[in-house]
Image (tube, rainbow over all chains, first blue to last red; front, top):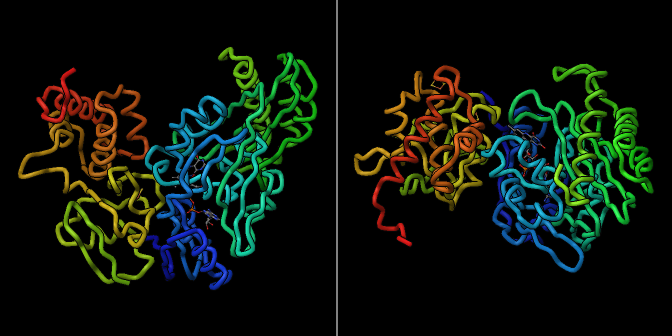
Amino acid sequence: MQTPGPTSYQRARSVEAAIASLAEHGPGARVVAGGHSLIPMMKLRLASPELLIDINDLDELAYIRREAGLVRIGALTRHVDLLRSELLAELFPVFADAEQVIADPVVRNRGTIGGSLCQADPAEDLSGVCAALKADVVLQGPGGERVVNMSEFHVGPYMTAVQAAEILTEVRLAVRPGAGSAHEKLERRAGDFAIAASSVAVWIEGGTITDAGVALAAVGPVTIDARRAQEHLRGQVPSEALFEEAGRIAAEESMPMPDTRGPEDYKRHLVGVLTKRALRKATARALHQEA
Amino acid sequence: MEISIRINGETVTRDVPPQTLLVHFIRDTPGLTGTHWGCDTSNCGACIVQIDGRAVKSCTQLAAMVEGHEVRTVEGLEVNGVLDPIQQGFHEQHALHCGFCTPGMMMASRSLLDENANPTDQEIRVAISGGICRCTGYKNIVAAVRWAAEYEAAQPSPTKQEV
Ligand SMILES: Cc1cc2nc3c(=O)[nH]c(=O)nc-3n(C[C@H](O)[C@H](O)[C@H](O)COP(=O)(O)OP(=O)(O)OC[C@H]3O[C@@H](n4cnc5c(N)ncnc54)[C@H](O)[C@@H]3O)c2cc1C
Ligand code: FES
Ligand code: FES
């Protein structure tokens, strides 16, 4: 029987109160959102927080809204709400692609975007999605707010830029013209973490890719920002040959480890194939012709 | 710590350690062992209950996190001796064999029909995909949910607006 070890529990009444409590109790205190990563880790004694600060009552952190060139997603927004959001489906369909294959609908009722990013599990799909979209995250601490780009957010396996007494409050996505995005994942069975996954975003203007994001999940110690593949795409006219080459480069940039989900060369091969497919789909979406 | 949770409309209050999982809080309540507890790893779905109407795996929430919210378990399906259509559907379509997965399957399917009165077979399959059945197989479970949806559609309901 797996149960979490001894801990204390507190329910936060406001973001400020949660931050104050984190500051007061030091490194032994941990925020709990959906609990769908933290509670399993506590059962396995991979995490043994002395105090849990529950932020589930902070409705002010659960929203998806468009404001002045930005889409803002509150940290407590649950997977199910990301999946159902019409705004995201229209502007960033990569979310719906990913959410259909993240865990199962029951887990999706609880898990949150903030928890997914802060967990910093290299296999987390949303980390790839937000990295490909070049999202910013807002971190609030005792001294106020700061904004960190996804490219600097994951600093190591299960390690993020979130400092002591800080809380991730919001994910920000810039709305830019000509955007298309897609997520391709291969899993062993429905609801499992990825064997490999590729999240892609392209911005196309006048027939040319002006900017691109390619991020890989489950094929390295952290979510991999495939920078060389992005560089290769930038300034080019989309074509099958271009996607093929970008996939090949992304596969080179991946750092898969052999495990029960498959050997290294298989995962690397998958990265190439999934990236190519995601690029094809994202491009078709950018050009408003569904693949 | 003292925790009070409304389960199937009745308030249950007990003094438990803060790390107590919701599934154990429920099962340690006399008369509420219908919610099962299987894998412990958030995978099997035997422990699914509704929290404020949404299906949740109760082995992956602390009881403390649910204080002040409404929990509905499989025991809450039957009302005044009348089985919920989901339960009738499982009976009619032979959707259980050993019955271990059944409470979770029923709560996941009840949540589906609450949101989507006329789901496709694919939507039913997705809705129960957080549960694992090791003996009946899923075909009869899907048929049971379909049966319940059709049964509910055939009932004259005072809340349904004729348009
Ligand atoms: C059976 C199962 C299958 C899954 N499959 C997948 C999958 O296929 N793909 C996938 O991507 N994920 C998967 N997940 C993970 C799931 O998406 C989790 O819900 C998610 O990773 C964590 O979100 P949470 O809200 O539950 O976080 P929690 O467990 O509450 O927290 C996780 C970590 O983040 C911290 N944290 C949470 N919120 C904040 C915040 N706002 N600010 C600062 N720190 C915070 C916590 O302190 C903790 O360290 C699966 C989970 C389960 C149980
Ligand atoms: S016991 Fe909760 S999912 Fe298996
Ligand atoms: S009926 Fe036996 S596990 Fe489903």
